Image (cartoon, rainbow, N blue to C red):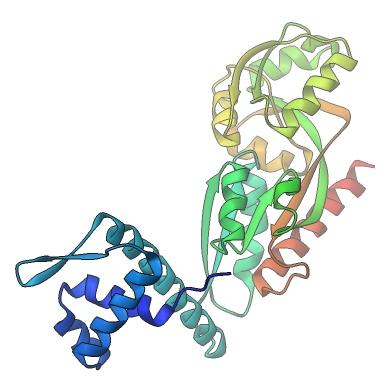
Amino acid sequence: MEWLNYHHLLYFWAVAKHGTVAKACEELRLAQPTISGQLRQLEQALGEKLFVRSGRRLALTEMGHVVFGYAEAIFAMGQELLNTIKGRANGQQTRLVVGISQVIPKPLANHLLRAGLHLDQPLRLICQEDRLHRLLADLTMHRYDLVISDTPAPPNFKAHAYSHPIGESGVTLFAASRLAARYRRGFPYSLHGAPMLLPTTDAVLRRSIDQWLVHHQLQPTIVGEFDDSATLKAFGQEGFGIFPGISAMENEICRQYRVAIIGHLDGLTQHFYAITVERRLKHPAVLAIVQAARRELATTRRDAT
């Protein structure tokens, strides 16, 4: 395996930032021949020219810009590591970066993440939402501490990520009050021909609902399909159709979106996972979030039974 000399990369980074070897020497407190020699060794190791002379300054080549981008990310991550360690040691604010799959219900995500903010250790919570495969790719690069999903990590990520089950919930159908009153009568057979808003076909929940409908010989009218659960609920709030949500968050969904319950999809269960690069959870905020999820969803299962 080839190894990159990070001292050489640091010298390159300093020269690229300042544009001259002389200014980099001042920052690093090294002699000019030392830095010039290290730059030549880096170029030889990479097999690429990184600088060209532009007047009295050094300008990056096309490959130099590529290497500089990686160097920026590497040293920024190193500084972040030091800040995190020092912050934890001194009782200062620590970071928790969470990736949330687009299909995760927002009321559930909000409810679970609050648990991380109630620790004695001050926390800076950073949440980003995306498709699961992109979140997992960044997780394996340690850009996230935690990814919350409705499916475990697929086989191509299992060598680098661990899926921790955090609970399950039934599925409830909601609609604006006018639609709910109409389709609640005769449920579930009233769903035949009814307007529905559903996740897109690549979502686990959508496939489960499709199977449930086939089993009950029901064919609703699909009015819209959505990647994002919040957008789906917003359309449901406006009265465009019936939409699914997890039973664990019934009260929150009704309150937030001002909708009513039509009925429950008996026998249909949605599962949730916390995915990390750790086999055993260690980050205190991640532990708090996972424990809160298991308590909340376990309570919902007991109430349902």
